[in-house]
Image 1 (cartoon, rainbow, N blue to C red):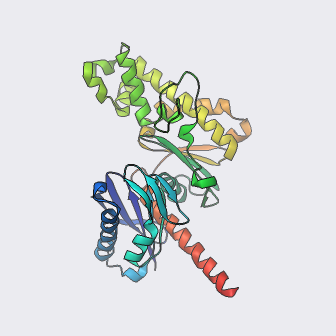
Image 2: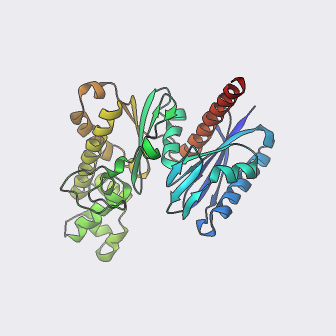
Length: 333
């Protein structure tokens, strides 16, 4: 029996998970990334974590089929190179070659958002659907499309950056990408908190102002906006409705372009639930042709903590199987 390891690498923590052939999570471990020590340090830490998992579960190295790793930033999944990841301080790091040589097994890498959505498509609420569009709402906003079990990349592996759609003249917040008024400046955990802080600074009445008086308003989070919403706070309700509406409008473009069977909403801001997803769903319904809407199902992400690990392992398994097929064809030719 073969086993697979999925790694969810972030700027703060590394999570490694051991999975069986059905991608059931058998065990996992977590350690700080300590990215300031450099890529060699981080990759060695990952290798040791994987070896520890195998030893703890009494699994021989020869039973490890492949390792998958999801990392933030821009990734070339064909060459297995992290071309740029700002929060890791990585530039053109050949992750697959380094980690593969260290472990003696095939290693495949991809962007962490794509790995999370792939996990939701393989073992989450997207399971059983041929075409799955997923988004994550966290510090920023990104998307991925899984078509018949395969990720869609687009030119330059840059497909899915839905957060950088410009949403209208009324939105004029500068985005980290260099544009102004990107969807993720509103529809993200960061965007929800920013709207609340700016409204309080402008003198808007809100229970948030009572909870975070004066300079403490800088500490307002998206979770606080949800809490204020539940208190019936008019400002929090306005922010959620506005954000949900813009999110639905932005998603209408993606739904029309890709015609997904299922839409998965993940990431920290998705924990706002129907406070955010209700207005999103209504705006999306009004903004797409009914043929798209009638066949679309919408689900909150179910693998919030483990989606990246599961998706990375499933991705590695699929890529390893494809390599085996290509190798057999090459030998026959």
